[in-house]
Length: 326
Ligand SMILES: [Zn+2]
Ligand SMILES: [Zn+2]
Image (tube, rainbow, N blue to C red; front, side, top):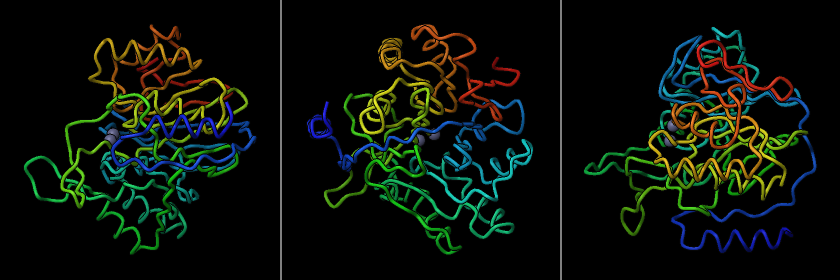
């Protein structure tokens, strides 16, 4: 399929979708990442460090490093990185997958602490449009988007937010999807929240939700925060805009913990069709969901694992689950 045809399909595919920015389709770079190491720094299960309802991971690709999400509690990622012997002070780039506090809650404390060693530490924060929209919980007039206040505090300390309205190659072979078209009605979010608009309150589909995609020698490695855009929406979009290769690894939160048996079966069948080889399911993926996808997508115990703090994926060595989740 040509790029123009892909753009047409995507345009048709998102017609009527709520408040999702239509991303420009850019020509894919042919650059392949040769070495990848991804270490989970915040998730519920913890062999080392502390667990929490949240997500964060350090991405290392061909010598470049970036932090994907920052956990929930201010100190979690700081403490876990220390305990794992990981120095984050030389990491300048951060991605915030979406506005929820369990992905953005550690940023300010991390930045304040790490800037003592390196003023540029975590100073460039990559986000997608929609992350700063005003939100409301049902029955409340209070602002419920914690990332609005976070923006002011981080900018006051010299941090810069960079918005990406479409797919972008952040580092050679390392892509951000920008907002993901909602091709399938996966509706991976809840409880119901609303976005404040000039027309009143509209349901919050987390339009800014984006994923990181590494175009590697073995296929695509996709990292998601909460997967609110939908697991399959995200995977298929990554294959459309980055490279059509097989899905070598899917890592992070997929928000399938409360999914029905039929949703899990549909998701697993689509992942199998995409050629899924490795699954490191953390955070909101759900424990049963990881096991169900393992079985239905035909994966082995070694290749489909519940993520723990300190667990990792390596392009050469595969998943290291640590002790409890092996
Ligand atoms: Zn979320
Ligand atoms: Zn989350």
